Amino acid sequence: MPSPFPKTPRAKVAKSILEMFLVRMCSLNSIRQLNESRKLRRFLGAPLPSADTLGRVCSQINSDIIRAVNHSIYERLKRNKAPFQFSDRAQ
Image (cartoon, rainbow, N blue to C red):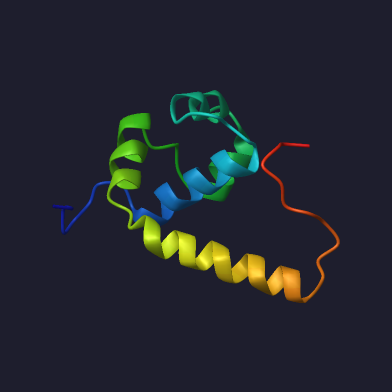
């Protein structure tokens, strides 16, 4: 059960995970390479959470909600004829 008063704010964890996906990091441990980045620190407003913290928070996220949001974004982009294609391969 999640703590009612977490030590690491959820927004900081969410921003860290977003940053990980934006720079195409493959694992939670690899995000530590970005710890020295001033831009990332400014974006987060604090140092990165540990890989254990990121993993613990990610394991508690309801993936059905994320899938639904991703699906709605994809459908909207498809309807608006976005100028790029989604694929399983990184380009």
